[in-house]
Image 1 (cartoon, rainbow, N blue to C red):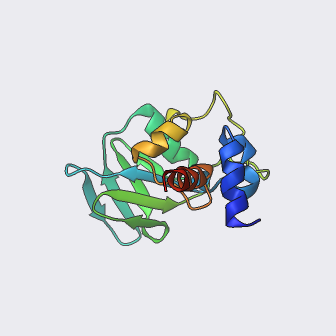
Image 2 (image 1 turned 90 degrees about the horizontal axis):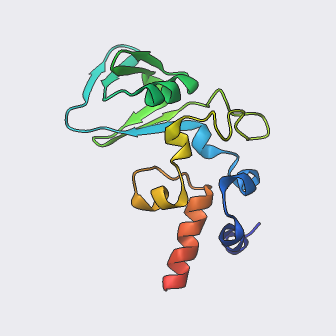
Length: 147
């Protein structure tokens, strides 16, 4: 499917469920979170331990992606993550992601941070939008309309 066709289709999609055939749930094969100046990052031989403000929802999100949580810290394998001064990006498939790219926890059992990923929140810039995401194409459509 051409880029122009995908942009046009994205304009017709109201939610992610109509888009999974194109994105294959990229957002569920990674986890990402912001670091702040108070985040303590400690490297060991094979892992990195990052102290952050942990909530029960965030702990559940991390654990669904196979990360270990120790109190107020998430422990990640160094080979699976990319850490910048502001953000951590981890390649890790969510345990709730089915082979058909749909969430077995949808809609009510998903962590709040997953439920909060909407067109509105994506535009606010607090989320990393994967390249094949519906919202990436909606942003392209909005940009094209403004041009």
